[in-house]
Image 1 (cartoon, rainbow, N blue to C red):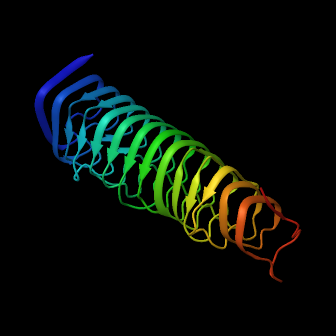
Image 2: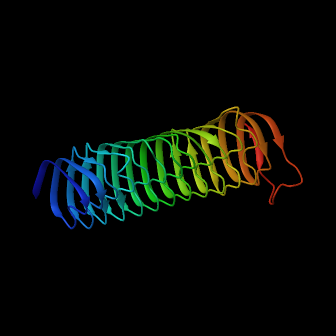
Image 3: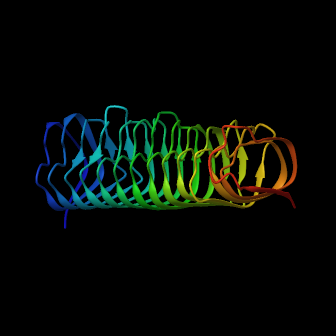
Length: 280
């Protein structure tokens, strides 16, 4: 493997078509597509300021690097990435990629990051700002996530999420086959139109959670007092170790909670309209 150290590049495609290359303390200045159409690339302690540095790259490692705001849309149409101990200030990262392994990464502008990616493994990721992270992703395993980005995990399929703290709006809409363990989910309209969403040992807050859900499961969860009008038109099996402020027109299943502030069953309930509402 060739090594390039302690230098900088700029302009258009300075390292286009490189293979078996290690970059050590290299800065990519203003320009575009520095490492396009490459394979087997290692970048350690590097700085990326130009647009689109890693497009169509197959097999690469990024460690202890920094992506400046100018390094937007840096990782697209690539595969088999390992990223560790890296800070990203640029938006629109990770698009139509597969086999992504991330550890200890901070993203300070998480706008439209991780779109249409397949096969994501994450340990300790922090997302700040932006909208729609993880849109249309599949096959995710995430352990350790802090996020205040809006509309996270929309249209996600086949995900296991652990030890997350999410403050958002409209999280997990239209998701399918998702299990969330030991997490805090704060925001409005959680999990609407989801299919096979399972929440285990989670704390939930925000208005009108978990409506229009199909085959929804809650196990040993806690609902904050802000959780009003929950479960409308959902098929649900829930064990809630707290009071529930209000429930409205659950479609079918069984809900068990410590107590209920209000149970609303009216003429708009949908068939089969047989959900059991019980006390623990």
